[in-house]
Image (cartoon, rainbow, N blue to C red):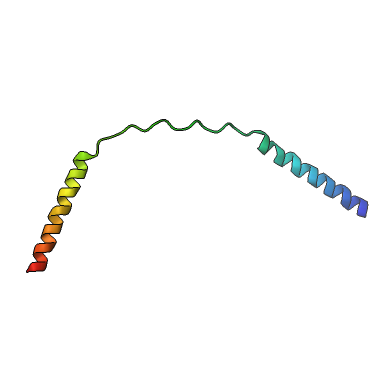
Length: 66
């Protein structure tokens, strides 16, 4: 009985190793690093946001004084 269990466990371990080891054998090289991103101007949108923020601040100050 013990010999049968030992043989079954051995077969199970060998089968598990046969199924798991190929997953580690087919590793790929890491991808190359990304290229340098292109620089874009942000002055137009940033100016509009600053103007809108300033207008909002002036409105809030006027509303507080009323």
